[in-house]
Amino acid sequence: MGIIDACLKLYEGRDYFVSYPARTERQEYWNQTRDPDGNIRDIRSERDLRKADVAYIADHLNRLPSGRVIDVGCGLGELLEQVDARHDRLGFDLSEAAVRATGDLPGVSAERRAFTEGCVDPGSCRAIVAHHVIEHMEDPVAFVKVVRTSLSDGGVFVCGTPNFACAAARIYGDRFRLLHDPTHVALFTDESLMRLLRDVGFRIVSVEYPFFGTRYATDEAWRKMLAGDAPVSPPFWGSFVTVFAEKD
Image (cartoon, rainbow, N blue to C red; front, side, top):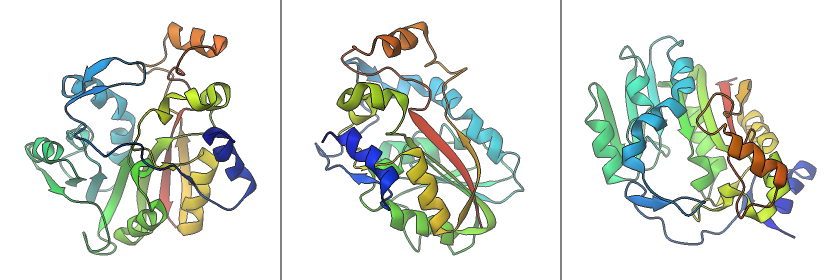
């Protein structure tokens, strides 16, 4: 049974994710990296594009009452830079380069460590974001529980991760592009992620599948999806899910 078939079986059981052993050691992401299509990319040079990718999350956070906003896996600070300065903005990341870049932003702090129990006082956060993060964790359930404990009553958790039950995954199977990253070790479906959040004590507020209106919605993506025979699947609607949830 292929790994995508294993993910689809999540609908039938009580498991939240499929464990997929890391295929390589984690490396410094902010150097040049090879994407699923084989292109060498300088991620630092794409910062403005990456800011646009997360602008919808910043818009949501900026509608919240002021408080502490934490970005777990803050990268180069693309999200926190767009969050209103009336919030107390703090980033966590394992990368020295990421923490340095985020900490250099005016009014933003960053710490180089994992977000675990004891990092912040219980109930002290208005919002916590984990965007392209949870799939890299060996124990994502424990992480979600720490997030809930850290949030104030009614606090917001924004969690985005690849959706391994999407159309592209079903059509392309093990050629699904989001299997390309060898550090993706916890594979969710949109349903299993929402089930986890509800079971831990969150209420789902809204769900987004960022694609239409983004840089990924191209004619080439549609052609590859219709043909289904490319070496790797294209970015497509549903391949990534972002869940906005409140501490219930």
